Image 1: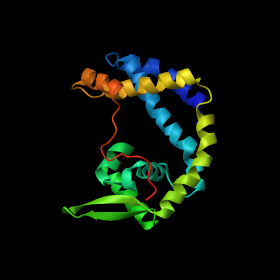
Image 2: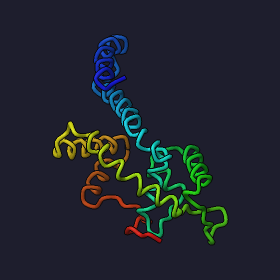
Image 3: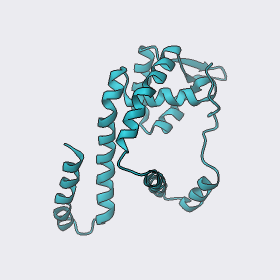
Length: 192
């Protein structure tokens, strides 16, 4: 379904939904529906680019994060948080990446139960070869927004995301404005 049809479906079904569930906050409900549709649409939009190089959006995201970390390594738990998926899904993603030779596991000497994930040369090549294909798609995907609108949308999404937390939201938002969150292991680009 094209975006215009998806928007029409939301607009068409919203009055009936509001009538059936009048206590449901209307604007917030519409926002949640649009975010879910947008998220799926973005994934669908970029799927052909990732498919062309033989990876998924999640795999590319993990590879990109690993490239940005000091020594190109990161813990599975931190990858789970940064990618925004479940532990079970991250386990599946990492297993697939291991089988494809895109990453390796490195044991943590201090704790035999823990390990770090490190990108391989093959993983690095796939990530870097994907970027040129993504550049045009990224520009095209958001071409209907001005630079100011894009910046405003990013800010609003960040604010909405933070508002999902119920504790210390105002303090956290102010702190992020002053000093953006950078995971402790995130370092400068390192091709080791």
